[in-house]
Amino acid sequence: MQNTRGMHTRRGTGDRDLSRSPQRRILSRMGEQREQRKREKRGVDRRGLIGRVGEDLAAARLADLGWRILDRNWRTRYGELDIVAADGRTLVIVEVKTRASRTFTDPLGAVTPDKLRRMRRLAQQWLAQQDAFWEVVRFDVVSVQLDMTDPEDLERAMWWHHVGVCE
Image 1: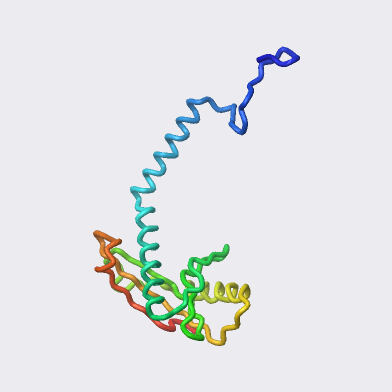
Image 2: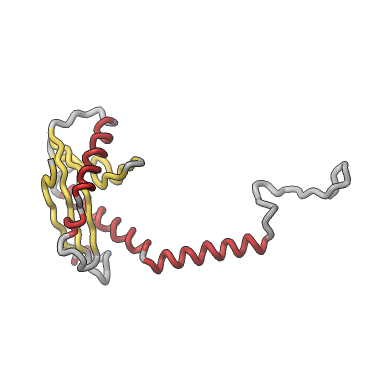
């Protein structure tokens, strides 16, 4: 179609980038798919699955103990609190560490002093956003060891609850 100045224009292009040919767009998509396959081979999706299974198991077990789960995966730009729960009148900040290998006998070994400091700072931020007052705040770690061959088999999962790992 020609406009009033005799130049050709395209209609109905919307948001598309016309500077890229269809071949370039296809090659770009293929490159993205190749990168996704590489990430899957490196185990990024497996690690996410293992973490999710461990956190779900920990939350379920804590709820079975009569705890109220107040928040899960609470995030700020400074980090994340895995589980925020109430054990009676005590606020409990729970870090969940999950493994599906034999690297650590107990995944608690992966909770460093730096991680505990970050948890304290994040707990202060979480508390600042709440209306309720908590007299006692406790920090626990739940360690989950999953089966290496089938991480979703919860019958074979083992878990340890470490109460009051820091003040």
